[in-house]
Amino acid sequence: MAYVTPTEAVARMVETAAFKAQLPFRLLLARGFLAGALLGYATSLSFIPQLQGMPSLIGALLFPVGFVLLVLLGLELVTGNFALLPMGLLARRVRPRDLLRNWLWVYLGNLLGGLFYAVMYTQLVHDPKVTELLASIAQRKVFSYQELGLTGQLMAIGKGLLCNWMVTLGTAMAYFSSTTTGKVITMWLPIMTFFALGYEHSVVNMFVLPAALLESGTLTVSDWWVWNQVPVTIGNIIGAVALTSFPLMTYSSHVPQA
Image (cartoon, rainbow, N blue to C red):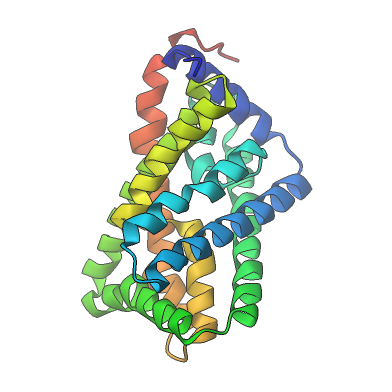
């Protein structure tokens, strides 16, 4: 596993940010769609151990396969871009409007991909155990916050923050190795960690909560967005920028400034 120093890795991340900032919206949307669907795949894969009565940690060990696939394929995941694009902004390689443009189109693409896979999954998998599992997920990810009101929304923000600290570290770790094996191993660890701890990832929720909505008669679109999607997205952004972008840019003294 050929190690890349932090200074070199951060320089590459800034270059990636500059590249992503200039991608046309069609590519951002298409690559975002595929990334959202792949994370849906990985999330549904993580259901299998739970449905078979195994510890949830087994599902967490499986889930990173989706993240690894989308990174190696060069797809667009908005939660990773929540850290990469601000790094480009800090290095003066990305304009604010290009950052917002990237986030908007990738978020939309991720959402469409998650919705697509949610519809396919719920239409093709008819299992009472899956329905029961999705109902329990909706309870944990939406109704438990709703019951607490503002405190619940703050909890969702906090869990989103902690989640995307690990997710963006997973994104960053891909730059710390020059081999595919090294990238896979280093990405796997932080992604497994956030999933095992049950933190909130906005793109994962773009699959799992629509799936729960389609399978249960209790969850509504407004419940999903007010009590999970919006606060979790806010937390994901804060975690990415405050805990990954700014700290990693302390290694950027040799990053070329535009």
